[in-house]
Length: 109
Image (cartoon, rainbow, N blue to C red; front, side, top):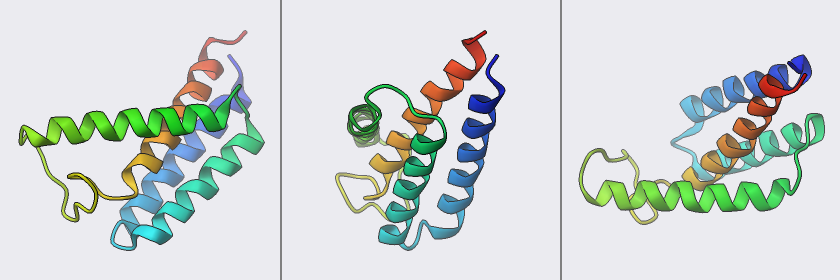
């Protein structure tokens, strides 16, 4: 178990929850804060091809969620881009790279 990676992951997750909770009504500020969190996470605990993974997971996560939302299971208070808020791909990207780091922290000896 890699305690540094675990601490970085849990801290980024908690901070992401905090910034989304307080800034979801200010989308461009929220996007900036999510990018800053991703940058901090990358500096503290980098993974291979982090930018590529951030973009890929952000695109796939938001795209899949958009397709699911067309079926009507849920909706967002401020849909701005194909049924979802413009900041959602950035949250998906951050969640993806943080999830990879969390997995590494748990699985490494």
